[in-house]
Image 1 (cartoon, rainbow, N blue to C red):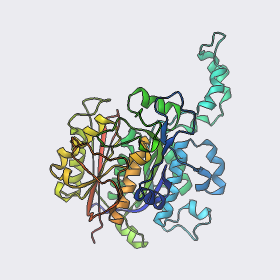
Image 2 (image 1 turned 90 degrees about the vertical axis):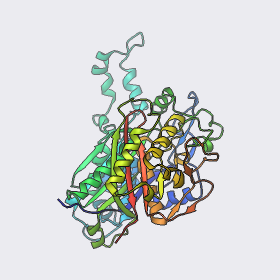
Image 3 (image 1 turned 90 degrees about the horizontal axis):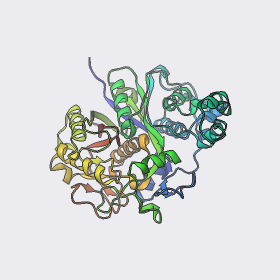
Image 4 (image 1 turned 30 degrees about the horizontal axis):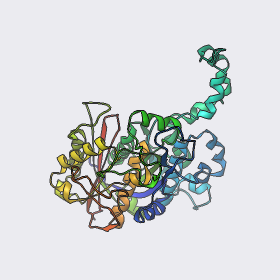
Length: 445
């Protein structure tokens, strides 16, 4: 069976430094930060009180008027995915049902909706604690203890019948498929921070084998809630030294790094069969040529000290693309700012790329946006596509003194022009064990 070439024709982003590809790209070039003191809830009792927060996002802005009632059952993660999908479809010039019904484009769709798929990475969606409070209060006995019988008899009556639909991870893909009338294969990947890369990799395979012509793919998540912050605090992953200077808190691969910060955000790419894209005159950011994945069988909570699982994913992706380490012109790292995780990632990149790892420019953007879990990889991939398109690398915020032990050439200070023919982007799940890598190339005729 012959495989089809797959290209990137759209980029949609919803991040703490902007909504839309143009806004995010300009913010990165100007080295802006979206990390600030958390305002979504009172963080005073937490040791880390900062995070990457999106301002001014409402799902109603990104769906047809007739669908706005459905936004009432959208958790924050779903809202981010819906916004990113809208931005991606519009950026790609797709006449989806959403854009037609919003009056932003005319005529019938310029593609076959039965050939449009969706693959979205999702995380653990946090329940709305305010909604739960009333239900829990009605479920406690006279001594203030939770009573499961009262929960069933009285507590659950305080929740709306559709309450659960806000918190199912597959609802990100569900709403996007409905809004844009995507009728080809749809799937949800829930592998923590590796979810987006795995979702894009699956979309790449779906189009390659001819099961779809176009896929909206990527991921979204909001960790900006008390439960999300508490989990990361209990696991010891957060910086505790940046409360008085939020914009400098997260320092990937920097010698002074001491932890990450939570965030919210996501991105969706439009992947498309090359001939299909050319037939409709689409702009092409680049080509997806390789995908690799692996699992850390050693530990679910500690990174491999030599980064072997990540190295395996990178080697697989390069082999899939038919490339050698010397062909790589840019590395978009995952770079959380967690000391052990950064060290493991750098070791894995050195193991896979050899001497090239220290020579090729590398980019780490979480200093600007924080770690949004399943949405983080999608933001990295979207930025990678923009780097390829613009032949430019934005600076890695807060990398003022790169850790020499990591041995990577982080672009810092200001943007750098570059000849980028091929890049590799990596992601790994914190505590999940999954690793993934994708190779993008400048389109060759």
